[in-house]
Length: 452
Image 1 (spheres, rainbow, N blue to C red):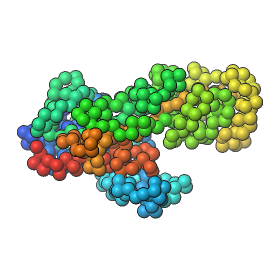
Image 2 (cartoon, one colour):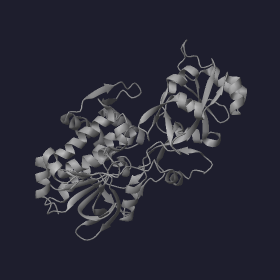
Image 3 (cartoon, rainbow, N blue to C red):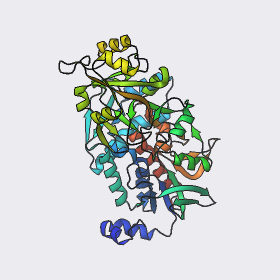
């Protein structure tokens, strides 16, 4: 039972607690990780009143979804045909994602009370975009409540450090201490975008290239390591997305402050050439910066923008004024010529870039008008699309493609729903996390109908 004993649990969730007590004679299903994938897996696995325990290393559930916008893409049949044509073949996994994301994510959460609002999508009119009222934190709240209602026993500040397969079950080693027996285990710990050493190794990134962490440090790849230790394999180990809109956080070594208002800025590379990807801080923009000299650049803003723009800190889960970062880590110039001298870039290149105004120009915000501030632009980790190899039902697979009994994976630990091909259309991946989590929980119910 979670910390605080059974009495508070009985007072808040008497039915769930009674179900949990009656089921204590059966080994529990263990879910590792309390993000959307882990919560969805726990909800489904507990659906037939079997005991389920969820272990979360942090002080609260939710993972990175707690501070994201959780926009969800719903491709139409036309989009599916377009994706099939672009990839040269149809794909059962892609078809499954397209046909189930509305019912199994949007409608499922809607049944819990989540309100969704449409967003325009001019770039891909055949893909409907929906945003949850309350952003990702709202989705986490509904999933956490549904898990509690289902009787899931949630333990926070508890890290799983080892898994051992032994006959009719799995022994799970915990930190700060102890072991528990499990009927089945779902690995849903997220990815490793917060582990800079691992990202460098996966991308074979030269140590001279500056790299910032765009995810919180708890995204360290622990779950993937747990899966590898019991015979799993990592799929597409080089698939890591890098952004090109992070600047160093002076208060958190190695962490990024994310520049999310690109239309108000001008990007240049380390030699002063225009770097327009700053205006659209999405996708694999980091690879474009990596191809520039030194893999670095600058984000240039004028004084008004510096006063108004906020940069996002994943560590602090809050916005930081650009003026604060400019004063502590930026370089300032009276005009483009002066700033070029301070940055050590050719004046003509920077003046030409400023004249191009890689911004949305208005009478009140002409970038060419100084004074100007340059913030150091650095490669920033975004998402790890690699992860443990699983099948469509979340079973962990070994190197031969065979199912490893009693082990499952979901979410970013499984490569952000790669069997569902969600990455082709859904940038936030929350829907992919929920889909794979639900699939793993449903598979456990089918695989172990008597709970053992």
